[in-house]
Amino acid sequence: MIIRKKLRRIMRTKLVFLTAIFVFLYTLSIASDSFQSNLSFPQRAHPFHVGLVEVQIDSNQLELAVRVFTDDLEMMLSERFRKEVDLTLGDSAINFWMLHAMLREDVRLQADSQAIDLHYLGCEGEEDALWLYLEQDLGKKEIKNWALKLTLLTQLFPEQRFVVRIHQNGHNKTQLLTGPDFLIQWSGVDL
Image (tube, rainbow, N blue to C red; front, side):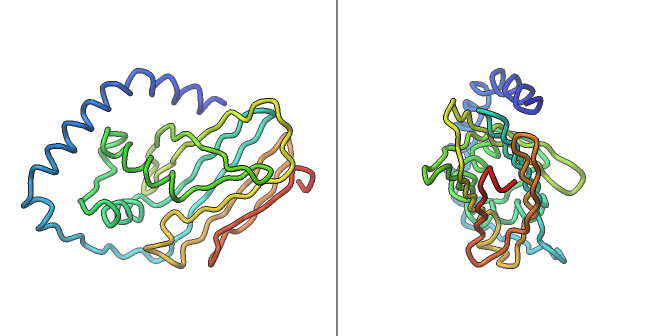
């Protein structure tokens, strides 16, 4: 809840400004044919690929935080969007847009077999990693069965793993999320 309030306040003040910057920079990058056609992305060595996922469910609010290595995420975004990405710039408009687009495809959540549309709030750097924050208001409906499919980074790193910690109404569960399907299912009564 604290993360959500903090990021929501920041997002309200920056959204219009960041959108204008994104449109300008995106238009500028498209106009530069030589920039896009001559890019080569260096492959950075990384000995392991493990991320952390924190799922917090309290009554009618769901918060999801995903921690991944920054260099892995930069490589994935560079590959997907065919442009060099530097996430050390923080939550710039272009970075925000690219991360939002990628998370919409790579983080899928279902509640009682119904897809949940997660809202990307922003990110926060931490040494060599990045925390990505998502949320959704669940309304008053009591949800019994959950499913999380997380394919973030797995196209580039098939050995990617995620430690998933679920905190739901005072109960906790930790599970390792691995391939080939990168799917975790749980029931509120199982916790």
